[in-house]
Image (cartoon, rainbow over all chains, first blue to last red; front, side, top):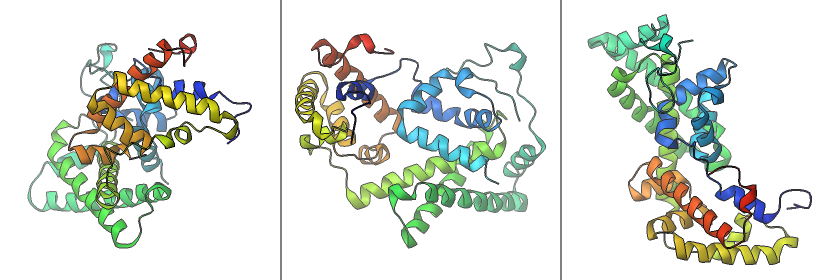
Length: 77
Length: 230
């Protein structure tokens, strides 16, 4: 991997360990995921209404995966 | 599309008084709710139709994640069918909680997407195991994505991370951090192993990451001035 022009190793570690105090956690994010996804599918910006969920989806792999999966499910042809 | 009535902290319409009463359901959602709260043939038919939809979404989701689970044949069938069946059960139990904040199908599909995650986590645990006590510290530089030119720095940071884990994490935090980060175990498999829920494991990881970062900043390994939040 070539990181010559990218962030340093320490930067990447810091990013990995970074936590966002707005992060609402998995339970709350899952409670409102259907609402968040419908806003996105409708072309709106759910992260403006739900910044804590947006913060969580940036940090939580499983919840982010489910967001992508649900969005794909409701936008299928 | 139905309007939103709750904010993300659970305050019912506090920021928008125009949304204080439940929105009317769209006709399709109304039809689903009526059928799934009825009895007899109407209920059975609605369940059968919904199960078909859930099965389709489950396999679509499994296909989307295929490069990560690699399941095929009977294993794939079993996971998809179990996810759809468990989702149907959850939906029929919780239909009274559907408040029309989205279309019914969006709310319902959320359950099957979640069940796909749960089933994949259980399958991983069954077939590959969840090493909660194996600490392969040699992997840490790879986890950090260290390139050949960063070998020396990677060793130094890995050593600092290991010391930080020894000094600031609880045993529980350490076990989960090591399983997820060093061993690369999916969070859902850790959830299945511990018999807990995702929120609890995530919260443990959240606290562990924060404590470790603060320690590494205090020791001068990370630059606190570039921190964005928290």
